[in-house]
Length: 582
Figure 1 (cartoon, rainbow, N blue to C red):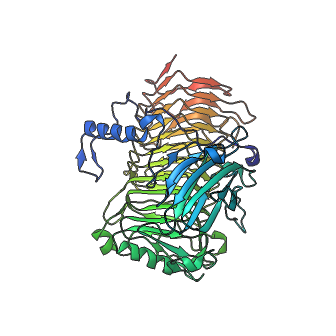
Figure 2 (tube, one colour):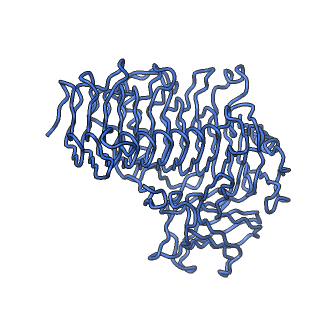
Figure 3 (cartoon, rainbow, N blue to C red):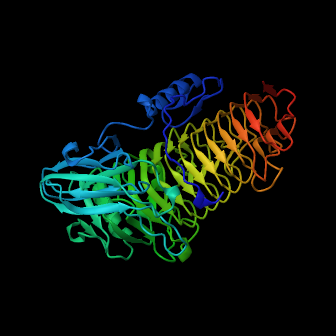
């Protein structure tokens, strides 16, 4: 399917709270997750249920009503006189809303108690919106438009929608109106996120790029050469005070080595995707990750195995892969995290991975309770997002597009994670992969993959290898090259209520909508494939709607699936104890 012809209504949040399937008797068997010792199955079950209840509280998952780093859902007033009041803004504040032809303007009123350099900006994926900053009389002071994000090999242009102004104390308004999208329509969602960042908020310092507007007001100023040196100085100054926020002003930052975040309680924020950290031509990162939350030596990594309460938001990381940047360590990020987050990042054109939250290799410590949301990872040479040994973490509302290998790679003992409402498209291998990695004993298990849209990837839409107790649910999987869903050596897992349509586009009469197979050691057994709609009506059609590779892929249950258009048979069952209902 041609890329330019696909325009999806993205990011519709599921209101269901059924994060775990109660029918599974094997979820969360006892194992150590390094968050509190060895847990029994029942203890793990209760902990996971509580965790997911928090995620789905009130029927709108991942939404909280606060202004301290979370997003407020508000309905802006339709006129200046009806403006929704935000009160006095003294720190970072974020809200979400929608404008369209039937609701053409949202107005918000806010006040400043003191004069401040102040940024108002849209998220990178909030394409098709214009923001106007108005004075107390409704006069326009400044405007900015996010018309979308584009990519080409020579120049991936910056995304608009950021305005910064020096404001006196007083009352102001922001107006949001719809505008046209000239960038890639895939990189746009149906709602906007509007962000407010005072530069002189408490416990906050600012860093200016060489070309930043208002650079003279910043606490730290970069020169345009090896700008990570100045950024690292700013991070260290806050880290040594126990933590705080570093604001990277709009502009281009030239990066030749790691930006090091080796302190707890650090927030590193830009002011939209017009804050650009770009690897310099022919740069060779000394260690993995442009943003690196790990020490360089084994001794230090054993002394402190991960960093907590780190938050990264509102910036673009450019790996500059066509200008000779080195392959080995050129990742967007690398580190081991606890209770941390990435929000509204664009990570693109890295010679290796985009996102790479990781375990601490030396200490064997996993990343725990990490959130990655509202981000775009595109045109990286290997994977868009790799989640090595991440546990109890959430990955949602992201786009992973046109990466060289997998869109999302759930790998190396990654367990008890939720991957929800992501768009995964046009990647060079599989859309979403769940696998052990190089060590086959380090299986990735008990993960939930739901409500994702997975299409036009070169190989499988979703590939699950040597996993168990995982759930593939409510996904839309279409136009991928190989099988829609492939379970390989996987047991006690669920493929439930997915729409699986016109996969197998690489070759007619070869691939299935759902395929259960093995590696001659581990077989696919005791899985439930139920309530799926599997269709095939293009030139290259499925061989089977559902199929098993061998008689040892057995004890699987196929329940209430609706299958149409397969070339040979709806369900090709070889396991003698597998069942079909009805």
